[in-house]
Amino acid sequence: MLMKYEFLKILRKKSTITVMAASLLLTAFLFSLPILQYQTYNQDGVIKGSAGIAYTKSQYQDISVPITEEYVEKTITEYQKLFENPDNVGYDGSEKFLIGDAYWNFVAPREKQLRMIASAYDSPGENSGFNKLPELDLANGAKFYQMRNEKIESLLNAPSRELSAQQKEYWGNMSSKVETPLQYGYHEGWEIIMSSFELLMFALLAVCIVIAPVFSGEYQAGTDAVILSGKYGKTKLVTAKIISSMLFGVLAFTLHVTVAFGLPLAAFGADGWNLPLQAAGLTIPYPFTFLQAALTNLGVIYLVLLAMIALTLLLSAKMKSPFLVLVILVPVLFLPLFLSPNGTAGAYNLVLFLLPYRCAMPEIGKYVSYQIGGLVLDAFSMRAILYAALTAVMLPLARLGFQKHQVA
Image: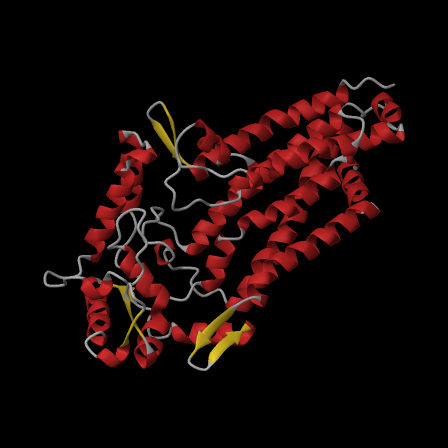
């Protein structure tokens, strides 16, 4: 009964309804932008919005195939043959490229796929696009997966990454679990979700705004004296406040996630959920599908949410005003927005990747790793452990903080 009362107390506040409504509208707006701004091109010009999405999806019908060595060799060979006809070739003074029907009929429908294939032949840090494909020697085959493996090995051995032998072995073993040949296909909706996770931090902030007065609001209203002097004021009621706050936070955030995922998937379709992440980046080491990666990162964000609710409750138990709670919380949540990593090694970068805002970003292609003795953890694992531990520490402290509050 106490939990139900405390939950309804949070839910029925006008401020809760206002903050949640504004937050849901903001979430809907932010995750609608890729839909509203989407555009593609054909020979007749630009195609926008839903018509552009439908056109793009239709282009994938003939290229949703396993990326076998034979397919790569055949595709590159066809691309090279198009350059044999001078009418197909344009030149801008530095490089040659396909134009006219050769471009629109061959390149345009498979541009992302061609870039993915071409990326296997680039050196680490190089992004030559299609430039290398016309000159590739295929006498001994495409060697596509051999080149991918060699590129990953070069990335792991790059001095700038400062990876230990154990870290290199960890990432090498993980990458070897990626099943080949890779399946390629349409995945626009999932790619947008994977690149937009950090926008959920505004929903997380809204939850914290609603939770901030749970204890400090009692201090402001002067009801702390009544609560703490009651029979269950320092025991069951405190527990009810904490559990109801966590429950509200999880439910409210889930509603935002439903909107955030629902809009792009409704517009772009859920196609591609079972495709490997390497369809979006060849050197991504995680052997996940798009759905698995999205759920894994979402799980980490939920752990960040629980830790931030716990921190909010702790601050609320220690401070006399919800405003002061937010003065501390906002920088904690959004300070990393103004900081950029300069690599993937070193204390500054490794700490930055663990701050709340950066934790919303999957960082799936950066080989971010943490080593504790002989144990190596990737970013997903380290974030999950850290925020689960923070929640476990801060919730008892919040409880104790309210129990020991001195009534004025």
